[in-house]
Image: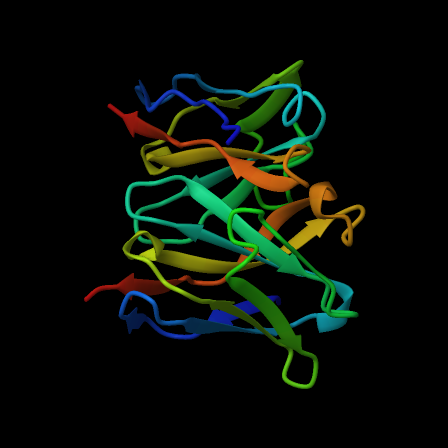
Length: 111
Length: 125
């Protein structure tokens, strides 16, 4: 089954800028938009970015997204301790009659 | 504001079925579909399927197609997900999600905006 590949971990110090990548294929990221979700321990995910680079209301401007070809990335600037969480990318995959696919998640540690 | 509240934790034997409810409020129920996503311990999120609450049309992930049913009740603004023939590997937190997007009835043109709190389903002998 097609997957989205993310680095298992990332880290940074307060105030730094961190980027998390998400690599896919032509049938998913290459053909559809990407969204990003943050999940704090014991809670449901929350959307940070949709349609590649759009922030829902209430999401700080420190979070930004981009997409190029079959890859996407999430950037977090001005890193804060409360950003420590798991981050997932997601997109639609056109194969196998179509389905949503998520990355394996990146655990962000704020040092 | 939009509220999405799921039923409580369940424990089932292998081979049994489980049905989870997802009660919504704060918006017009039939204007938005409902998706179901699960997360097994230490695993990535996994999409199960969705329902167009306006007409009951469903679309399921091919992986679950033969043992999942998603339904909805417009009178109680509640969606349901039933998973049959449970296996140990179905142990997971199950989430219902109300999406947002520019073309809300096209499953690929949405994002997962409003999540329920999750329902833990444990399959154990």
